[in-house]
Length: 463
Image (cartoon, rainbow, N blue to C red; front, side, top):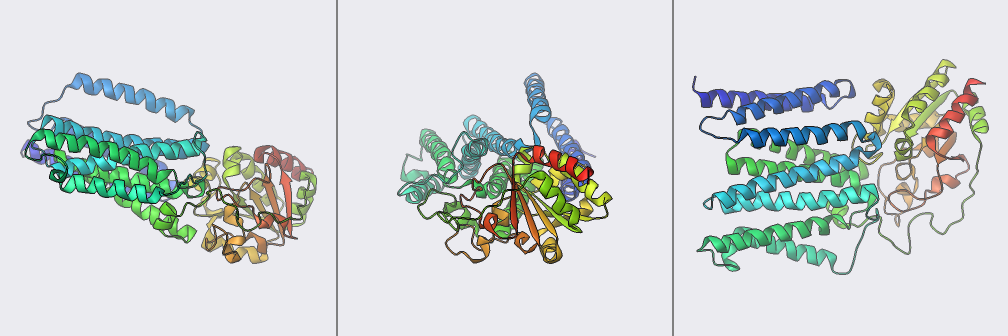
């Protein structure tokens, strides 16, 4: 068997490992093994590439890069909190896009005869992903306002930049002398600059409520850039892995859009969460807020038979998933039924709540998605809301002026009693107040989710 055949077989094995790994990532019980399997597939692909027949590599530089990357990766893995995982994913997306752009740039600059269109596609998508991802990171981390940042003519400017970029990629001769390498080189650098600007321009008008969709979309972009680079350098592993990331990212983006009952175009261009005078459902309307203590909340739970816990980003920020499980276990020990309601866009990243609760050893059997749990609220005694906001706002069902109108929500308001834990009355990512707070069957228990649940746990154990 020739060496090239062995290399291709290794690439095939790595591709199978990627596919099986992604499959296992779909369930919390198998996600860890799926991650290890995918990592093994990548290791095989790297070995196959470094031993590719006829290729020469500077292993000193490669080992130096691996060492630096391993140190940075170890620091991220040990220091980044679960609540900061969306920010880290955004950074990874950006660095993935940048890596593809750098490889394509290197290939073009060292080999002037490289196919210009493929080079530019890789560089354009990779550069756009880089700046777009770091704007998303800034919004999530608070360096940039989480609200949609808009200005007059913004979409027109983005459209002109996109049209100019496509024209340069397909017909550089319209702008530069394409009979000479310098003409292509000038077009190449202009495309990079335009892509970097467009990445910022497309991301800043997207509000915090839509960040889960943006992260998924940028993840897809990074995969497409990698696949384009794979075609450019004839690397099968890069083509396969990039295609898998691109396709899975688009599928997940579509799932997230359906979870909010909105189109992708509306997410990108709708500017949900921008500053406005109207503001939405309950802005400017006085609500009858009933503030209760944890002692009173514990007494309500004591009288309940069926309780549904609704985790939100407030629970994630407070790192309260472990004490939430303890409260649930204490209630179950008292003979009560406890379930968890997981909205598809809860948190700041797809699957965020599932990962947090799985980390706290909450059984997957009691985690119910929106369609499965909504009928359960009809005969639910208490819905315990822990930091969730937009995903439980009844305005989504009836208020056509609300930016979340039409979004499928958890029907917590149909429970007999709704206990809502929040730090303050501040609105959620969509920037609108939650009318649920003023409902007759709703009570508020203010405070940090972890502190509140610890107090509640003490009260429940004393009942």
